[in-house]
Image (tube, rainbow, N blue to C red):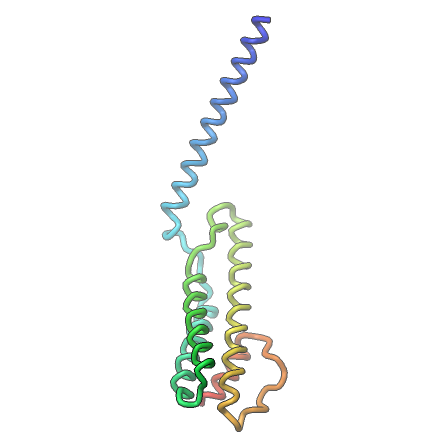
Length: 162
């Protein structure tokens, strides 16, 4: 019986030592991630950044161009769209949390984030296009089918503003 109790105590001590070492490892990993979060950058897609900047510029240009014609509600919508594009730019430049965990998970996190940002950018472009198309009467039937890509939307908006 004494032998059994002695083995249980040894096993318990070994288990507690294991838990202690794992907690140290997790603590160090957490500190490393917090310390290097702003230093380790993923390579930004310059094309996507250029598209976000282009949409920001088009929002500003169209807001100024149609300022007198826009309703109060449309002006508010354009302000919200400007805020969303700024948030998208900041979100894109910020590292995803999965980047530090493992290579494949970090890659998946980057791809998913880029897809989400592209989708949100497309929604902003469609909303902007719907608003400014009303104020360019010669171009009302320029595009009757839905906009499918960010590039297509930016091109159409640039045609309207020229």
